[in-house]
Amino acid sequence: MFVMSIWGTSLSLSSRSLAIALVLCVTLLYISYSFNACLLASISRSLQQSNLRNLLSLTSTPRNESSSNSSSSNDSATPASNPSNNSSNTTNRSISSVPAAVGIANSSDGSPKYQLLRQPGLRPSRHLPDTLIIGVKKSGTRALLEFIRLHPDVRAAGSEVHFFDRHYQRGLRWYRHHMPYTIEGQITMEKTPSYFVTKEVPQRVYHMNTATKLLIVVRDPVTRAISDYTQAASKKADMKRFEQLAFVNGSYSVVDTTWGPVKIGVYSRYLERWLLYFPLSQLLFISGERLIMDPAYEIGRVQDFLGLKRVVTEKHFYFNATKGFPCLFKSEARSTPHCLGKTKGRNHPHIDPSAIERLREFYRPFNNKFYQLTGINFAWA
Ligand SMILES: Nc1ncnc2c1ncn2[C@@H]1O[C@H](COP(=O)(O)OS(=O)(=O)O)[C@@H](OP(=O)(O)O)[C@H]1O
Image 1: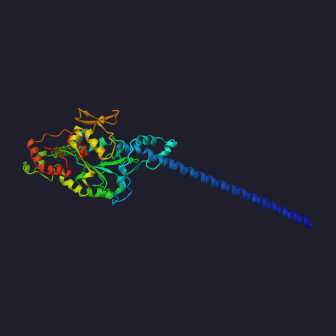
Image 2: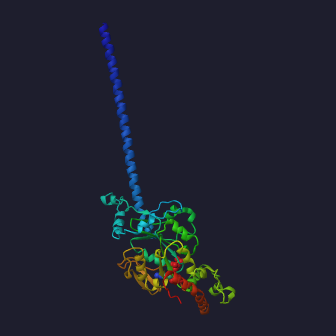
Image 3: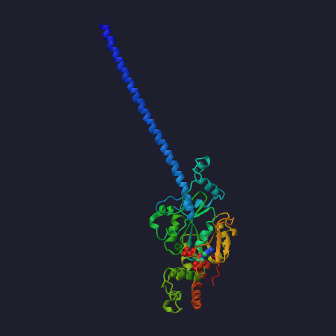
């Protein structure tokens, strides 16, 4: 009886243990299942996000391309001296890599081709400019930018960024954010014509990158002054006549050198400041007159200076008789003809020839100094 009762007790004990073990097993299985499910969900989420990020960074490229271009690699957030990083972008350019990469960029199918873009250099990113068009205002700076950006290895900011003269305190990170996306081997370019005449700019550009290449379009300072005046008059209905503004006291004897349109034409004065920071070999002077008469010639010089293959040639230009200026084809296949906008190539007002003659006389010594500094005789009258 006693044995029976012990046996019975141990039986009920072992079935309780069995039941407890079963419950424990089921609980463990449930916890393990939930944990694995969470883990898998989180892995899949992060994979989706990284794919999305890649896709977004790729699809944002055309937005910037439509406005312009750039390349260099400087992550500095403040305008402190960090000159060396940008210069490497001017070498090792591969024209053939560009259309290929752009083609791949449009693919979002996750194929091996698409994976190529993850390789360093092929993933588009923004860089500080390694080339600047610094001026001179009203000399053909927009034409130069539009012409040179036909090159597949050039990307430029579409509008004038004014970083070095107006927004310098915002820092290089801000500046870089205004640059277009580029891939390795492409040049990043920006044009702001007021850089040439703003006192602080040469030193600031030098601090960004001592190797920055500088493009300067120059034009007969008298015609440039009239062009500058024409632009100002187009915005102000009651503007005085050019002759009244260019001279002191209404007579043509004393030139008003404080008036912006006159002052900017004293190129030698501004150039001297730039030469304190940059050797002449880093500056390229483009004749504004020749850019109109023979754009292919001037663009050839620019491509050589930038170490680019001569891709933009006479095949890209045609003379538009209605506009009275050269216009361009966006490709060698002569598709998409394009002229600059209405604000480029305005009709100038009639100016008294005596006033023009007096201004020529005024500029002559400064022009000669400029020819001497640049080693180029621009032959302005
Ligand atoms: N291809 C072509 N089409 C139209 N205009 C051309 C071209 N090439 C040079 N130019 C000359 O460019 C002058 C304007 O110069 P900028 O672009 O430097 O002006 S700005 O400083 O950016 O406002 C502009 O000056 P204005 O003629 O006084 O309007 C033109 O003479």
